Image (cartoon, rainbow, N blue to C red):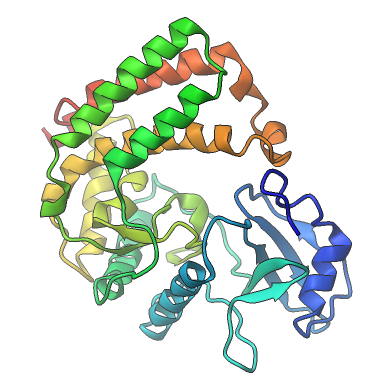
Length: 328
């Protein structure tokens, strides 16, 4: 039985091997831990030297039904020719497995590197890839997975941070002021005027792997219902006005090879960036009892981090108030 505070405490290399071999595999070598904090992910190879990425899901985060809905969408995407990492299924057709008290999925390793967001060709094909994914995503809705709720998600994240006790009184006052102002800005947006569809949810370059101009999407752990721009805005990273416009133009041109993009959704980019900022800090705080988090994010307990974070939120609040220069 796993502990809610230490969900992976018993997940030793021997237990990892035992759990995978219980599914009918034989592993001649040790598992290699990959960088992952929310779940635990390992690289293994079987006796045929085939490489697998094995995910041990964090207990209590998703239900079996929510994980299965993620997997079912991956199979739909693959059947439609969209390059994604699909989970292994046993002879019974099951893709979500159980072993040693954990829920497990195995994915064939997809080799490659992250794309270059300064490369117009990469941006075009990434936009096309996401457009292809969304063209399948809009065919039906998720029934069990989350729906993007920016206002309530931001408010909940703020409550987690404020309750942490990691900020002094001055910082708490500043954080409460700026986070409340950002939430008010989100409240005036008519989010429901946009089309909602199944999206990847965490579409940063670390979840896109490939070479040359061929990429695949991996790690759909955060898949949810949201506007299309949720999967596009993280590709527009440059601080230079002309380069940011180039990124936008290439991504949308590629996207519209598969599906029309509603340009009204561009007004959601800065609010979504703000939401990611507040949720990320809250995520680290909420997972602090997991030993992987203090080891990976030791600076979060320091006053300097929170001063910097509050300044970032204030800058983002200002960005939400004006049209980006690259669109002006």
